[in-house]
Length: 308
Length: 272
Image 1 (spheres, rainbow over the protein chains, first blue to last red):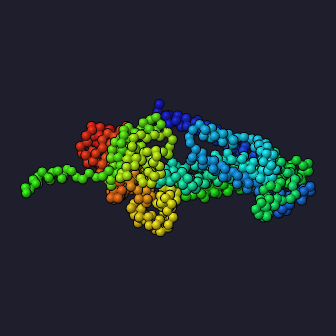
Image 2: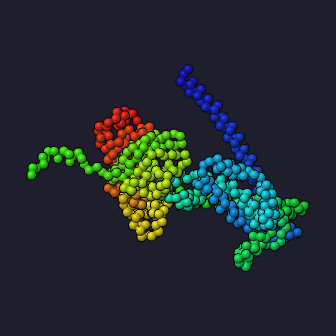
Image 3: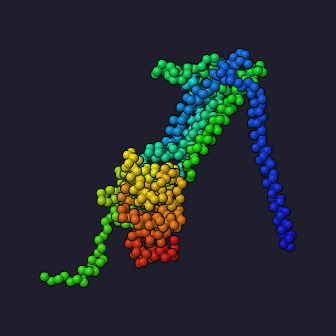
């Protein structure tokens, strides 16, 4: 065979092989578009329906029987307050548990068992958390259908996310850094508080915020514990009552949250309420997306000085 | 009345140079990673204010041996020591389970293979050992940080940017920073685990020069992969193979007339 013929043959072979690149690239792009376009369509629909309803009044009005006067005041205030309790529950518990598992726990079958359970907890359906909370917080502890109950429930719900994020962030720290601290005579706690926690903060915060973004959209467990669907008053503003007990009046008050408000409006027959639901959905999506954006920003800021 | 015959004294005085005092001595030291025995019955002294080099092929246990000296193995489960490493002059067996590894690490500092500064400022890196010891006085910290950086021949290069991030230094500077960090607490002994293996030849030369200066003040134990380096920097050399101490002697003896054939083969590059 001549050299020229060999070259031609190789070129034909390369062209044939490259056809598969094209096939896969096309399939991959299609697969990607299914996801992206679905989201764009849903979001677009929501914007078209809901955007006209967005106004200052929409945020400052309570729900109402008249759709054009109804607003999301009690819902966004409720969501915000519940999120405060959720963060206050999930962050110390989750970070504490994660640090303990990574830095302190002895390596034995008990720890392995706990680790497997924590990972599995992340897959438990949220309604199950709602049932647990109804039995434990509402009836057993008598906390009522309050912001506290909802915050604790959602806190438990995202606890595995926070634990896993904490552990992964800690594991990303090279063992050389840990050894450097120990070699200087640091105790476990000195190593943890001076190095492990600061260097893993970016990852932990990201996990916490992503967990919160999930919690803010949760509906099932909040309905299960008995959040109200119609509420025309606000909880006492936090930290304004008579100290000391009065400071926490807000925490025991009834409430509603954004997704429940949406659910309530969608179940009405009037189209005008559906537009309200779309507007509330839009607000909720923007809340979630901005939380995620904040997580990305935090990660960028905190990781800027850390290279390994 | 009769003058002591001079020719008899002179040769005695020449060979019986005062034995340098021992800083540490390993006695029957063994070490296990779970069931794998990494060190077998190691017996050797470490002389005060001398540089002792550990050489041997990869996997011979030299780093494992080094890390016994600050109980680094305690950080990981399943590790087990046997035998003693005595620390003088107080006759503390640093492997004794009753001796807190933190106490040992406060007396014996370590410099690692790859520079591992904390993602903090140059100043905070050097000051960390003192902070761990509860030191809060700014003036004293400043003084110690400067002293340690001078000791590590880094002061002139960084004195105007102590608050810069340690990661912004070059590799050789980072390693000298790690040496300063280890020096800041006035350790009795310094452990070096292949400190120049991640550095270029110029940075390596500066670290080697530094070792010669440091041994005025502190006892040094260094693991090195590089035989020329051992020959250049050390006063004593131990050759290890498969977890055993094959030969320990003055560096000159090890390199010029080793007693064991195996040592000679390794030194001359016939195996390794």
